[in-house]
Length: 170
Image 1 (spheres, one colour):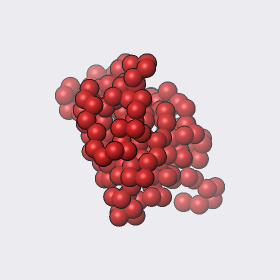
Image 2 (cartoon, rainbow, N blue to C red; image 1 turned 30 degrees about the vertical axis):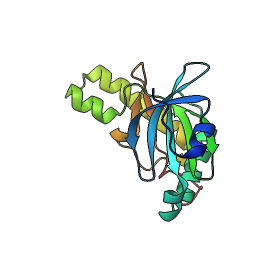
Image 3 (cartoon, rainbow, N blue to C red; image 1 turned 90 degrees about the vertical axis):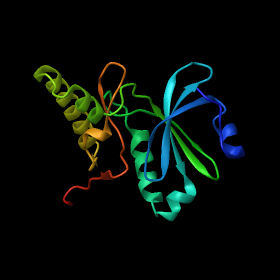
Image 4 (cartoon, rainbow, N blue to C red; image 1 turned 135 degrees about the vertical axis):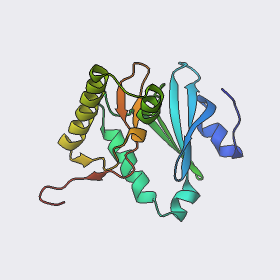
């Protein structure tokens, strides 16, 4: 893991973590692997640039995603550990999924055996059902937003396009 940081605020804000390589890049930020300095626990940190977010008028989208993730604790939904706010960035500390996107896993394996595909599908349904029971619709389910943890369990991720359901409304 490297200690490189940009600007003065990031190193202080993330003083409990050692940042590593970039895992991915999104609309207004990037995701890096990190390790908690005291426990050694690996996490994924989504770094959202506030200026970029405001420029793209995405504040509500980010707020909604964080609000939803703070409420959810389910074995097949990505876990949010903490959110760190600075004047320039928002650091979203989340569960790290060792095997990355389901999309990459499917491409690598070619075709899944029926038993494995069934297990993965059941886990997706379990996560989606939990969302719906809690009046949340994901609205962006795709293999790129389904992550695989160290035991190849599915985790629903990227709730940026999600929304709250209201009875009687589409």
